[in-house]
Length: 147
Length: 140
Image (cartoon, rainbow over all chains, first blue to last red):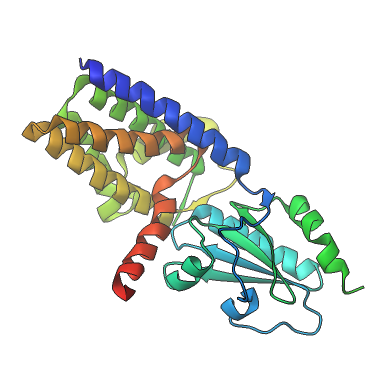
């Protein structure tokens, strides 16, 4: 029996519970871009390697890693969303292949989805599998600009 | 290959208990045993996971078929991360560098508990970081 060991077990479980609760509460929520993350004069469209079509209003740029189960769920959900919503595009980037883009955008975990307006402005970010309705509500104004 | 997510959580739960016992008993041999449990699926594929086999034979038949499955690749990668930490832990405890053993086991316990309790795969999240810093090191 190690007293230090028992204390370490209790400390780790307490820290892990706190971390887990914070991660779960934040997962999939739409949040505003932090000032430290914002990218001036860099368009997400250029990072995604495409120019917006006349109908395109919003780009969802998803940063993923190859060994990431929620990344695959996110990709499936956003692909479906982009098919249903006119003006919405979805592009997925693998950070293992394209670490430069992750660095440019200050992305620290995957999946992270960043929404860009047609003019390249960053609109919002989502870490984890996005909550569909929350994301659509947040993009409503931008998507409605086409009507 | 596809896995039953309930099996992954089951394995993480046993791992959590084993790693807690490593810290409580200070047993380097128990850490070594857990390292072997990680090594089998990490090296040979998820079907060689001992805890996974226990789940398939003893637990899954009572639960019925899974509602969804998940890809094996991320889980296998997380076993490799677990292997690295438990090898360091076993080496630390068995060589008398107890502090090294404690710290390495603590990190492994943190990751296993997050997976067991929240379904959050720290090893998978780290993959992006590792790739990121490797590239950063090359270009710097």
